[in-house]
Length: 199
Image (cartoon, rainbow, N blue to C red; front, side):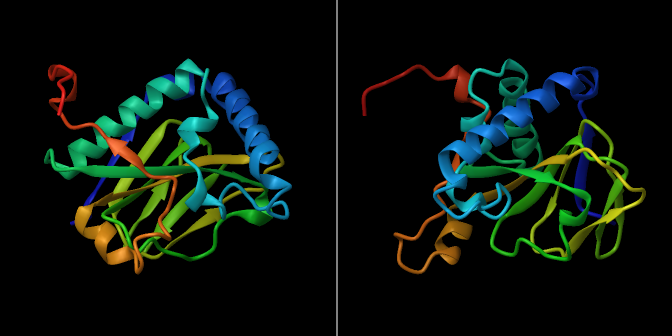
């Protein structure tokens, strides 16, 4: 039995052009803030130093998406203990799609298909047909790669994300200083029910 969730959010497909336009804007913001300073570092390989949610500020559809993503993360985790997530923009030409790799130092890994082109993601024991609006979240550490099923000219746009808990965090750092600065908290299910109190 494969231990993953695959959920399709219709509003991504229904608003595909707006999602793509704002992904392009987010990539421009990335290049402006980081690209030239770090020798044209790609938004994928610079994943440790930003969270895509900050590059989509002012984009209501992405706001909705990230709120829904956090609910999906909680559904997968099935608890209210502290969790953090990072997410980054994959913005690739056909010859840049990701080769075999994994995410061994997190609790869950997943991705969101914004404009995945005609591709599939091949994991060790299964394949996911990438469709606009899909959110995949599954086990950490599984080797996977992207297979191009037919040539494409436009950018392949997906959002990768990792989720950690306190134990993962303790295992992944060695000096408590070299941390991934892209992680932000995932609210728990009672978040909107609590009032602000002084500590």
